[in-house]
Length: 298
Image (cartoon, rainbow, N blue to C red; front, top):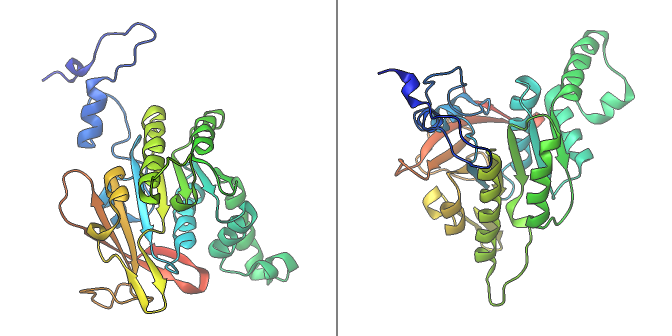
């Protein structure tokens, strides 16, 4: 078959059609007819990218994280993998932590040194060149941070649209879902409100053809009787399952027991695609507590 038959004719201005070739490419993660990058934008975690195919344009990804499991550390490990190491562009909306605190955490994680030591300049001669190289790479990374507190979803959507003024953004990260607000409908409970919030962001993601990654703390709670929380994506709230193209649950067995854990994995990331998958895939990762950093397990 001539692959050029997947072309469509030039369309008049004002019409918004998608070429069938692009849809075939996206569906099969293949490269039919032109030099497109197959799959989505890689996360930098090898097993995670095998499970998801990377972050695909226009899709919503959610990582549910239990309290105390390293949400910010995982977020910054992703940003480091993508923007510092691979030169992708990442926009972070952080209502929980200031841009300075996020930057400080990233510097400490990447250099393996405390901020006070770096600020004092008390580095060994053998350390200086290496550390300065790492800091230079961080400074040059295409990471954009909006730390507006208690952000309304309407403002978030407006600010995501405003990213068009920057060089092409490969991934939008929202930290975290439950901090977003919107207009309250009389009698509406919080889960229904969060579903509306996710739906609004999903519409913008499709409109702009950009992947959006939510972090969520809806995986469980800490209470006086001990820890309770989801042990699989099946047990996560419906608003996460209904509005996520890919839903993940971060589960650290050095913090809480993991069912059927081998004991070798410091971290299990459970991954479930909304379509074409009926059970969780288990992605093993390693958490390096001393520098608050996640890496591939191997």
